[in-house]
View 1 (tube, helix red, strand yellow):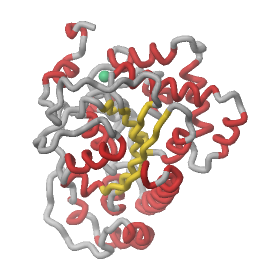
View 2 (tube, rainbow, N blue to C red):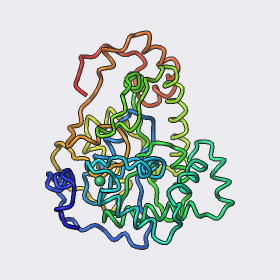
View 3 (cartoon, protein in one colour):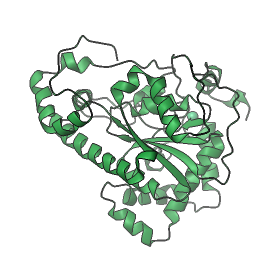
View 4 (cartoon, rainbow, N blue to C red):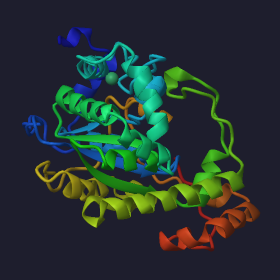
Length: 341
Ligand SMILES: [Zn+2]
């Protein structure tokens, strides 16, 4: 496809510095072998989209964003891709969906969305029911990831859908070799971030109005989602899963990416000594609004330590203490100097 028809942001991305110094590396063949998928699981506002973008800087890795949303609302509503185009006009996603839909029914998107609703819950009753059915949803899921790998020319696909229930379903899907990255962030930072709402503004990546979340709601859900993700990691095993902290990722993004690729990539080598620098979103669908920025410099965000009232910090700590302790977060927080996002 001629670059003349590509959106401006796509051309800008192609001209951007190669984060890993690997431009021109021949991608390994993706034919026949299972598609290697790095699934980023965890709670919202924990840097999952940033990690997706960071992994996607590698020429052998397709950072695809929250793939769970493709059939749910991204494709039906023709939402924006991180390249700046709407998905129906984005050459990457248009090609993926055309390849995926070849030989399938005309109601593929609606049918797939309904099957997702049955199979991607944490409890997984729908997954059992689906197994008794034709297996068509699993075959379509596998075919979607094959289409992403083929269209992008990448050996590894990143899915940052976050939901542990979806990953349970993917772990049981033939044709997918799953590696799970459990991303955790201090619950107090998450709760403070979720107290801020956003008006719907689709061109900057906010697809629906985000209402502020009550602290207790966030604390309880943070516990449930992280416990479910821990169960997921036990299910896939230590050789196919790892836990990282958001705070460690923003301190050393290249180091964390190197660790993840060492676990999941095998032949997707990372040159030692590549320089840190800005990163450039490519074709992530859905996820945080950061993906719509032309370039991103990852930085620590600890503003909550200075801004969040002590009583609120203690309320979250009370509910989340067992997991905060397990993930290495101090239960007493010293006020910090404000830092940039
Ligand atoms: Zn795109």
